[in-house]
Length: 405
Ligand code: CTP
Image 1 (tube, rainbow, N blue to C red):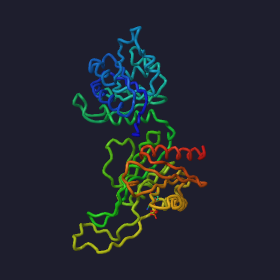
Image 2: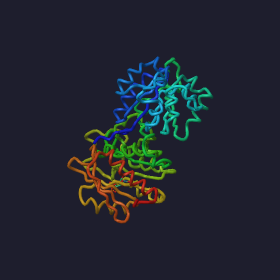
Image 3: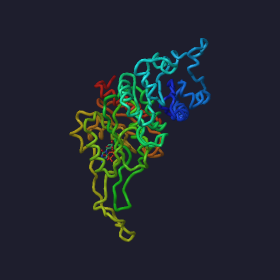
Image 4: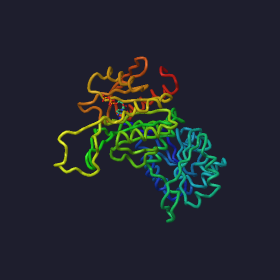
């Protein structure tokens, strides 16, 4: 099964009259690719920029316009459209529509649908910088930044007028992520989750390192899922190829185990959870040479010394946090996992078999989750993205102080 962030979610996309209305067409496609059932409602001004036929064709459903307000036989009324949605997404949201919603106007099909709804509403304002910085607009947005309303700030950059500044329609992929967060269960809301991911690399000289094939995919899946579930996420990421540029949470890039330890210690300030998904190198070459060693200078034997053990080094700082560790094992999964969990002071440890195509770098993972009181929960082979959700369920249980719930 491929995990889709918006699977079966009913989204009502409200398109307002700004030049970014054309980008909403790409947004429909991207939302649908993530499994959303999308309906579109447009203001009259929006229909001057893009035809309702475009949205009807892309979504495969009639596109609501103001004409539908006065049609007694309308198959989907504005009230029904608002009420059946899991999320209303206003993108682009113009200053005019923002003002209407903030002040309770319902004089067009879009604002009436919002008023009749009870679901979360995500506003994606997009407008000229002069309008964006207008105090009335900001006042209205402040009024729409609580309760079921959420505002996604616009990007900075070149605007349709040629001016520079805030006001640009955000990247479609970022809006999709934000929508997924609005639809997700928010059981990590208010929690700060630190996640280490990827390998570390220990240099021998300026061009050679000691490392391992960890892809960081498990940690990245955990970070994305925790963020969708409402957490403030700080990811400490070792040297893997840059993940997508639009990650919606803080990502601190590190190289060596020592750097990962330092960055994790800093990131733990005020944190509630530490997830050590990183495959930390256990040893590093003694005496790093700053320049490239030529072939005839390379040692016949590498002198190594241990890297810091991150969990052990931080142990005294973790007593008030839920700690999930990982252990990739080739044998004695349960017994070595359990011993490691106790040795490292983790609350939970996911032990997974490696080798024969399993583990490092793979899309799937499987294993056992160990916990206090001889807790053993089997996780069958599944996508790392699915496993991340399951592991977070267990973290949430421990956070709520109800591990057996
Ligand atoms: N870990 C750590 N610091 C290290 C090595 C590992 O914090 N220097 C963390 C890993 O991120 C993981 C857990 O400890 O969450 C277990 O990692 P693993 O490599 O299995 O444990 P080791 O202590 O290296 O044990 P061994 O290699 O002897 O199996």
